[in-house]
Image (cartoon, rainbow, N blue to C red; front, side, top):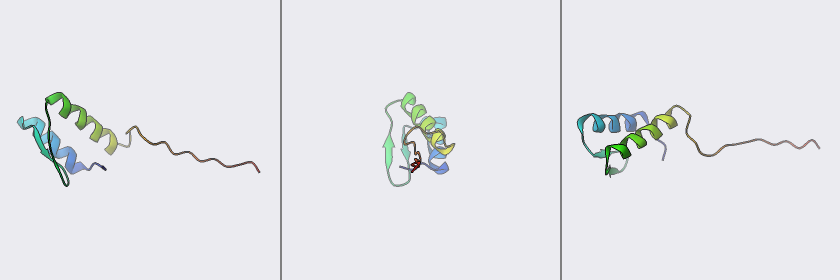
Amino acid sequence: MAWTQIDLDAIEKAIATGARRVRYQTHEVEYQSLSDMLKVRQIIKDELAGNAPGVVLTEYQSGA
């Protein structure tokens, strides 16, 4: 799933208000703990900043 600023805003609002249920683009998630929400918030922030771990693309050119 590609995260958006709207998703980040939604989870931050939920954290601020104490809600555990967050509606994202096409689905809704109910988190079990604040810790889970903080982890997901950081994942979203990292992806939006371009720092998300994941696939690394490399280019190779043969010398021939």
